[in-house]
Length: 172
Image 1 (cartoon, rainbow, N blue to C red):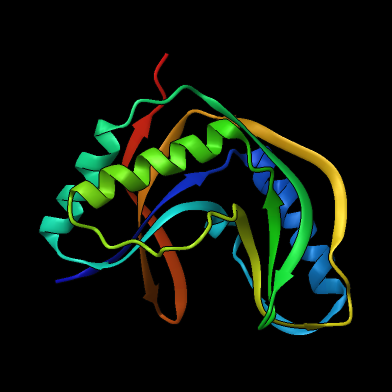
Image 2: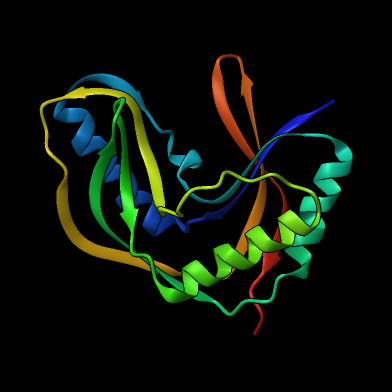
């Protein structure tokens, strides 16, 4: 049975709480929308889509192959894409871009066909949002990331659930 997979950075409780506060501010200022659950807030590094068990093993191998130092993630603004998708923007650092490129290269070597577009690091806080709010700057905050994870996405009783199925810690 195929699984919908992606590779992501998950956040600690403090960062997650601050993201939830921003999401709630947007919710308060919106007519309607589908707002991300606190446990689903993450930064996607690579979206893999529907994958077989063999492909899942290849994704795990790609993660295990990576070597990376702990990296600092800084969240600095709230913005949106056309179609009502709102996000918290992550500062694109050389270290973050390097990690994402190394991961993409490792996945491509194992046969994954990844989206061919510029990496735009963001954390989705809501979809189908109807609001008259304009994007805004925030007081930057963040954390040092010590791992990246292979995640499974599935709907259970109409609720989107993300489950960690493999993790790669940063090198010391």
